[in-house]
Length: 126
Image (cartoon, rainbow, N blue to C red):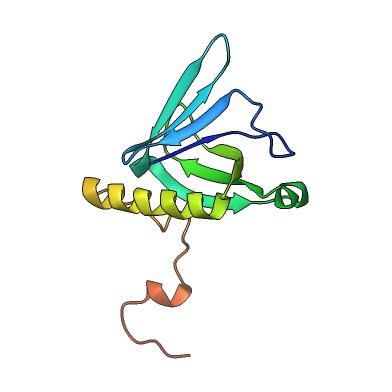
């Protein structure tokens, strides 16, 4: 699906972090001598947002922030990548496809307070 190397602030790919994904998972591989790889199942991603600092915009980069229910990665960022909006859209669509395929729903109303008028069953008068 997608593969990108984390870049320095100036856009050069001289880091040892590689982000990649397939149709079911997102991978974060780090290290040079000692490598580690974390994965997050796409259906566990709850929210996706993009930030672009002034320096990132100058070099055509951006950061995708992911809020997940994954225990090992938790909330994490895909930092300093090119074509950030296209990657975000591709990732967002893949997440929705996997959530539908796995029949996963999230509770969108966490912390939702009931409106005072919703507590009454019938009509009320002032």
